[in-house]
View 1 (cartoon, rainbow, N blue to C red):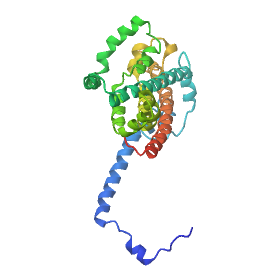
View 2: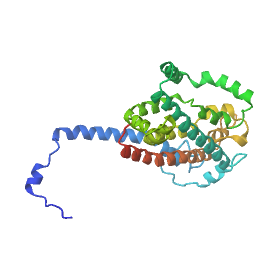
View 3: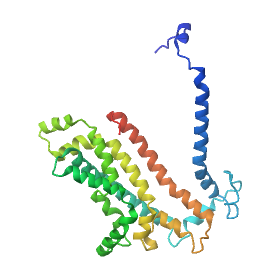
View 4: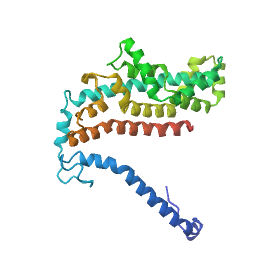
Length: 295
C-alpha cells in the first residue's frame, strides 16, 4: 500500500491549532499532572516505606528506599498466628461469592423492574431506591440479631448469602437504567419467535448487559475486599479473618506495631484489586465497543 506524498497543498490544508489556546491547555495539563502526583504520592510512599526500617518509616518522606529491606515482606507474611495465605483465601472466597451473587440476583431484579409489568412496580422500585439512603450503621444491629439467631456469626455466610437476595440497590438501579437503554423491539422480536421472559433475559438482555455486569463485578469485588466494618462485626476467630482484619491485628492495644511489616502487607493487599480492575477494565472497554451501547 503506497503512502500518498505530502504536498504543499496538504500541509496548507492541515488545520493549525490557534496560538491563543496553547497557553490555557498548558496550564490545564500542568495542573492535572500536579494533581495526579498529589493523588498517587500516598501509594508510592506506602510502597517505599514498606522497604524501610522501623526508624525510617515516619522520618523519611522521600520515595526512594536507599537500603531496601525485602525481608519485611517475608516477616510480615508469617507475623501473625496464621500466615497471610489463609487471610487471602478468606477474602478471595468472600469477594468472589459476593460478585457472583450480585451479578445473578441484581441482574434478574433489574430485568423485572425494567421489562416486566407487575402490580405496584413503581412503589417497589421507589422503596428499593429509598434503601440507598440508609446507612449501614442503622442496619447492622438487626442484621446481627438475625444472623445470630440463624447461627451464622463467625462464618462467611453473613457476608455472602445476602448478595444472593439482591440487596444491593445501587447495582439494581444501575442495571435498570442500562436495560432501559436497550431497544424494546428486541424483546418483541424474541417474543414473536416464542421466547418467554426467561429466554429473553438469558439470550437477549444478559449478553447486551456486559458493560453493566463488568462494572458491577469490579465495584462488588473492591467493596467486599475492603469491607472492614462488616467483617469485624461478623467474624471473630483469627482462623476466619480476612485481609483487612489481619492488617488490623498488627496493631496492639497501645496502637504500636511493626510498621514496615504492616505496610508491606498493606502493599500486597492492594495487588488483587489492581489485577482485577485492570483485567475487567479491558473487558469493559471491549464490551462497550462491540455492543455500541454506553452506560
